[in-house]
Length: 201
Picture (tube, rainbow, N blue to C red):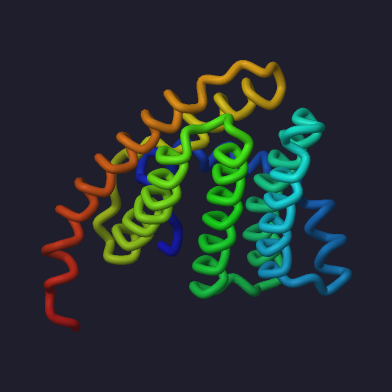
């Protein structure tokens, strides 16, 4: 499996993904008709992430709306890849890179504008990719983690509260997310060590 989901998350997301695929279908049809590649859609979320940062200080609600749009694109790219028979391991990896760049860009923007402690932003920027890479490798080596709490359950609600209502609990949310991700990395590495040390078939 070429993704960075835990076993529980994959099971819980399966019904939601079916609903989302129905919602995405008209957009996917238009993108397919225009011959827009899934990788281009993945890259678009990086551009949106940069726009979110620019808009944060002056139009925070629009910034959050565009952030949600970037998350939608993160789902559309995979749906487009499957609909057009372009799903590949490289595409899944490229999608991961784009996710990480978008995420780190937005978090860096929060630090730039003083909404988030810069040390925490830097630590998050290191932990987030390590966390997702660990999940990705666990799935690739068929030793998936049963459970891992993703940042969208911890950081994104705090981001919404800040950009929509001006309520800032970002330091606490990011600290909690870093701790949970670090714990998942530790468990993941324990599972990966024997799997990766096996001789190739």
